[in-house]
Image (cartoon, rainbow, N blue to C red; front, side, top):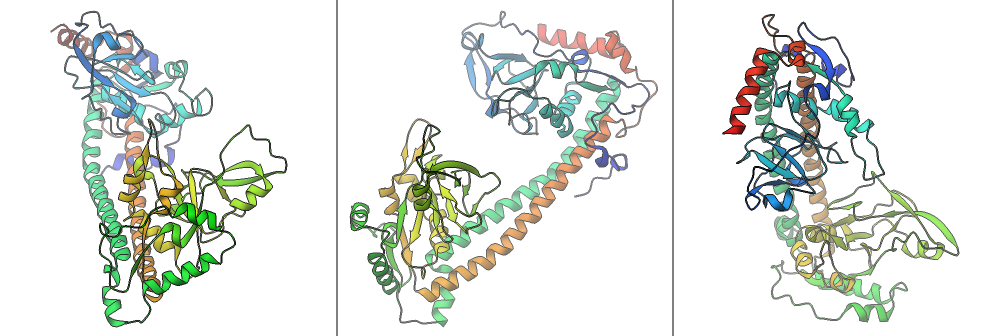
Length: 512
C-alpha cells in the first residue's frame, strides 16, 4: 500500500514532538479554547419535550474513524438533564480511559434535527475559528491523544482528561482556506488507505474462517480421512477410553465421591455430530479431574500466607494464554499447592460474556507456582496419552454451542457450573490418529500465525502512515500555502471574511 505524498517523508521521525514547531507563513500557534470553546451550553428549550432526538452512548462512537451511530433515540424531556448535550458541527471527545486512548473522537454530522445528547464521559468542542474536520483530525491524532493521556487525572480505571488541560493545549492554526485544502487532501489520502485497510480486514476474516474450518475438520476426523485409509489400526477410541478410565480410577487426586458427583446424567450422543468408525464419545468429567480456582477476596487473612501469581478470565483466551498482565494474590500455602498448575493442564473459562464461556487453552508452565481464580476451571487429564490440545481445540470450536446452551445468564454475566462442564461431550480417536491430528493442526496453525503476524505488521504500517500524514498536515507540509489566504490571526480576531461568511451561513441553517 503506497500513497504518493512527498510532503510526509521525514514526518514519522518527529511524530512524538509535542510542539510548538515552526509553522508556515500565515499560520500561528494558539490554544484550544481560542478556536473552539469546550463544553459550551446547549439549550433544548426550542425543542418539543416529547420529541425524540439521537442519543449517543460511548459505544456508538467508533474508534479513530469518526463514525457515530445515531440510530438510538430518546425523548428530549428524558435527556434535558443529566447528560451531555451537543449539536451539529460539534466534535465530541471521549475523556475517560481507555476510550480516549482508543480514539473515540468524532465530528457531529448528519443529525436529523441538529441536536443530540449522550454520555457524560464526552467533552464537547464547538468550533468557532476552525474547520470542524481540521479540529477532529487534530484531536484524533495519536500524538495529541498521547499528550492527553500523560495529563489525565483521577483514580486507576477512572482516569479522565481534565477540561482545563484541553483548554490550554497548544493548537497549530492554519488559514481557514488552507485548513479546508488540508482536510480535502487528508480525506483523499485516507480514502485510498481505507481500501487497503478493507483488504486487510477481508484477509483477516478469511484467515479466521480457515482456522475455524481447520479445527472443525480436525476434531470431527475429516482432517485425517486420508490418514485413516492409509494407516489401519486395531486400536479404537473405546480402547483409549478404557485405559483413561482405568488410570482415572487409580488416581489418588480424584475421590469416588467427586466422580459420583460429576456423573449425574448419561451422555446422549443422538444429537451429536457424526464421528469416524473407530472413534468413541466420552465426557470431560470422565477423562479428567475438573476443579475450580481460588476466590479473589482482599479480606482474606491466611494463617500460612504465600504470594503467588494467578490466571484470570482475561488471561485465558481462545487458543492462547495472554500473560501480558499477570496479577498476584495472597493465599494459604496449602491452597496454593492444591491449585498449582502444571504443564498440560487444560484451562476453561467459567464466566464472562455468554460467548466467552468455555474459552480456553492449555497451560505450558511458563510461570512457576501459577494458580487460577474461581472463574477459570482447570482440567487435569487422567492419562498423559490423551493430548490436552485436542480437547482444547474441540472445546474452542465444536464446544461453543454446548457452553452457550448450558451457560446460565445473570443480569451482567453468564456462567456455567462445574457439573455442566463435566458433561461436555469429547470425541476420543485412536492414539496414533490423535497424534497425527495434532501434528497436522500444529503445522497449519504455524502458517496461520505467520499470516496473522504479517497482517498485523501491515496494519501497523498503515497506522504509522496515517499518523505521518496528519503530522505533515499540521506542520504545513501536506498542501501548498497561498499567500492570498487570510492569515490565522485574522480568524482569531473573529473578523476574517471567510470566517464571517461561515458563521452567517451556519446561523441561517440553525434558524431554518
